[in-house]
Image (cartoon, rainbow, N blue to C red; front, top):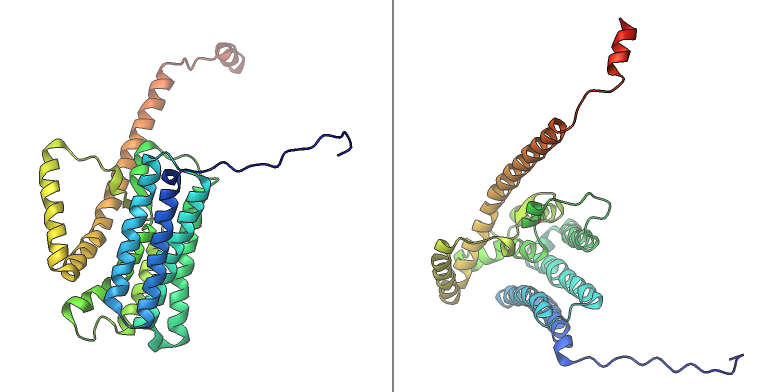
Length: 284
C-alpha cells in the first residue's frame, strides 16, 4: 500500500460443534426430503411418505435446537427456508405427480408446479414477515397466516395415506387428486388463520389428560400408522373452522377494547374550545 502498511488477512472464527448442530440437522432433513423423491421414482410410496414425515420432525427440532444452544444465525434461517422448500414444496409435488397426476399429462405437471410455486411464495412471505403491513396485536401471533409448509405437505399426502389404509383405486384417481392439490396450494398462501399449537397455553387441569392422549397417539402411530395419520389429518382440517372463529372472536374483542380506550381518552379531554363561545356570539 501507499503508506507502507499491510493489512492482516481476515481470519474466520472457529465454530463449535454445538453451533453447527442445528445446521447439520437442517441438512439431514433436506436429505430426507430428497430421498422421498427417490423413493417416489421407485414406486416405494410408503417409504416416501415416511421420509417426508421424518423431514417434518427434523424441521420441528432444528429451530428449538438452535434456540437451546444459542446458535441462531441468519445463515441458519436461510438454510432452513431452502430446506423447507425442498422437503415440503418440491418433494410432495413430485410425489403427487408420480403417484397420480402423471395420468393428466401436462395438466398434472402444471398442478404439481402450482403447489411448488405456492409453497415458495408462502416461504418468501414468511421470511419477509409481511413487510409494509402494520404490526399485529399480541393475540394475533397465536395464529399462522395460512397453512404452514410442513402441515401443507402432510395434508397433500392425505389421499396417499388413505389409500395405504383402505386400498382401492379411489384416492389415487386424478379426479380426486387434481382439485385436492389446488385446494391445499390455496390454503398454503391464503389469509386463513390457523392455530399455532406451540403458542397455545394448556390449563393445568388439562396437562395430564393431554399427556395421556399424546402417549396414546404415539402408541397408535406405531401399531396403526396410516389409520392414525389419516385421523390426525382429518382432525387438523376440522381445526380450520375453530381457528377462524377464534380469530374472529378475538378480533372483535380487541376492537371493543380499543373503542373503550378511545372513549376514555375522549372523556378525559375537554371538548370546549376557548374561542368557541366567541364564535357562537359572532354567529348569533
